[in-house]
Length: 115
Image (cartoon, rainbow, N blue to C red; front, side, top):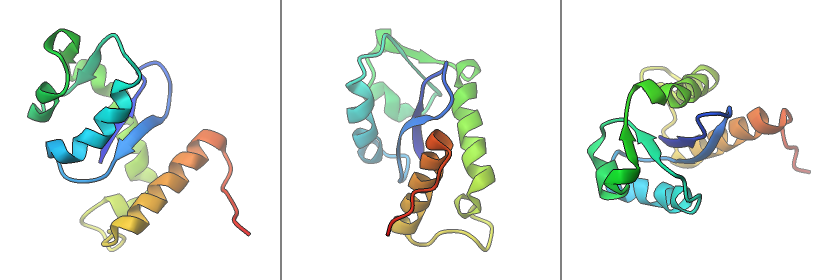
């Protein structure tokens, strides 16, 4: 799971589910690019270099604490994200729905009810 966060605010702003390829990152980058950020902080994953301009790119584990915190929170509340549990999701659709529901709850503190 790829996530985009704001270093100064809690919560995941955008996310994409898939492998660590450029094809999976592209839809997330299309969203993030529209924000016109002054700079982007990432880890050293090689895919970022093909999307982010070198002058706008900061590679630092130190500034990744917000991302790590949000990922830890997701893992805590969604056991289906753990590969080595019985709750592991085999359905990508159900995994996406679970993530959307949890992120909605984090943001609004309510569970949507469809009638």
